[in-house]
Amino acid sequence: MSAETTDSRFDTAKWLLVFVLVAAAVVGNSYFADQSLLYRVLGIVALSIVAGLVALQTARGAAFWTLVKGSRTEIRKVVWPTRQETVQTTMIVVVFVILVALLLWGLDSFLGWLVSLAIA
Image 1: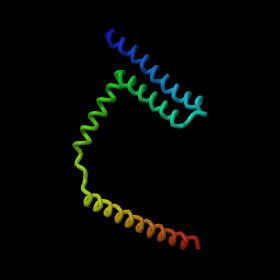
Image 2: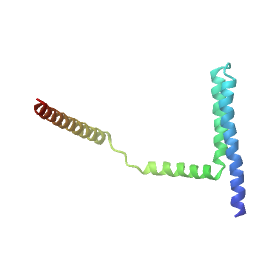
Image 3: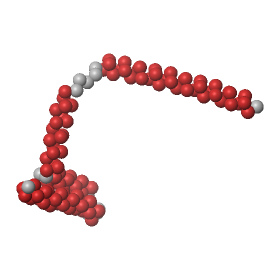
Image 4: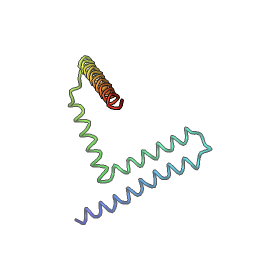
């Protein structure tokens, strides 16, 4: 149990470091506004990479990385539709949307006509 407490204490410090690095990137971007945009962007990218690497060293960061790796594995298992299947499915959806739109337009016109008869 003390190992978990030690890990969580170090994780808190690591997350604090991540927050400080991100804050430094934001403040540094404003402070060095008179510098070239390229240098500011490179600085932000460098600080973001360091912050990301520090975050990956925490328990939650490691769990997130495991989730990303598992997601990539699952994406490889997906059977993607062919171009023909995609086009056919898209056409079916478009036809049904047009049919429903026409039905709703007709119902709206009919109800509008009924209301105009009742009012007159």
